[in-house]
Image (tube, rainbow, N blue to C red; front, side, top):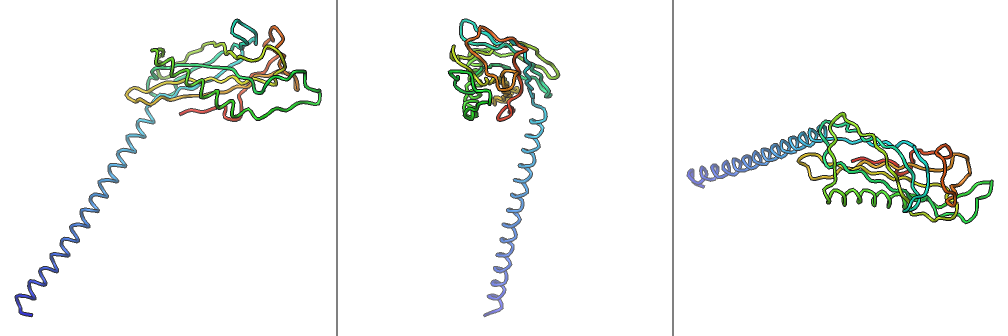
Length: 229
């Protein structure tokens, strides 16, 4: 190989390595830019998460459990609090009451009773209750709840239960939905409470005209009884 040919061969070899290093540098630069973008996006998401409203929901017993024109109804008090850092818009609340199991035809034996797992029915009731909020929002219903503010209200939860028989318990399902300014996402806080007779092993006789509040207990349902997003 002549001296000129060897020199050209060496220059071609150097050019290949220069191009390879340039490509590696471009890849590293692109990777650094992607990580910088991801870090900025995560930081922005974290800031948004930190600044958004958070609406808490609590239910308190009131009663009584009684009949009205649409069926059985239980009155309870509920508190809404915005514990976040921004106003909550389009705040809508709904609640319903469902039997934990179909009514017994006769009082259960003194030895006690059992009934099927109501978890699936409770989950369906949660979905239906929150969908009621969506229907209300579509009609323009909704309030504003500012940070560190609270609403103390009352609600009558209705249930289309049979007018005869003995219920082991009922579930009161409540859902509050709201939005954050500039964010189309709908956030929900859900609470489920158990309503049953105070005396152990006693059922709710739905033939009765009404049951006094002191004869009932109202406490958080342990399975799927709370969620917030």
